[in-house]
Image (cartoon, rainbow, N blue to C red; front, side, top):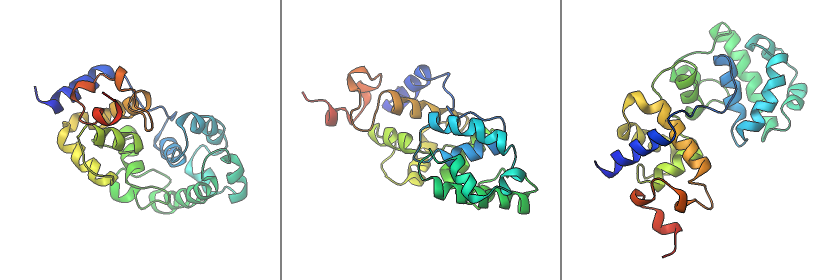
Length: 210
């Protein structure tokens, strides 16, 4: 078994039951939660959206929100002013162009305010069950450290990972790598001594003194 194959199988076994930490019931809720999650913890987003979705249960209500009030609704989230503006623009476009429904293509999703390729991939993968490989900071970091990618550009990392993993595993592999990044392969001090991939990781030497 090659080094990459060993990495994939160990991640699969270790994180088989992992899923997104964001709470959502439909594509609209996942879209809003993912927009809010940029530079904010999933835990904080879930606290915010618990009340937010009661107040704005669909794009129709969100599109009618007052900007200042919406800012206050999400003020404990990082970059809340910019996110509030994007959420309003996004909701209005959903109403004007998509009949209040969240679209299910990359092109349409990325035409929405506040939606980049990563957010679109999250919605495609977990709201519409389409093969997609979202790349956030955790996925990018883990992919580069493991030698599965060699770029700081998320789009290029995504392209590399799609070649490494089987298409049917893309969405779940995103979770494997996120949780490995959160729990073990941390940004500042990776826990190499506890890592199931330490013996096949080309970056271990950079963090463990001999």
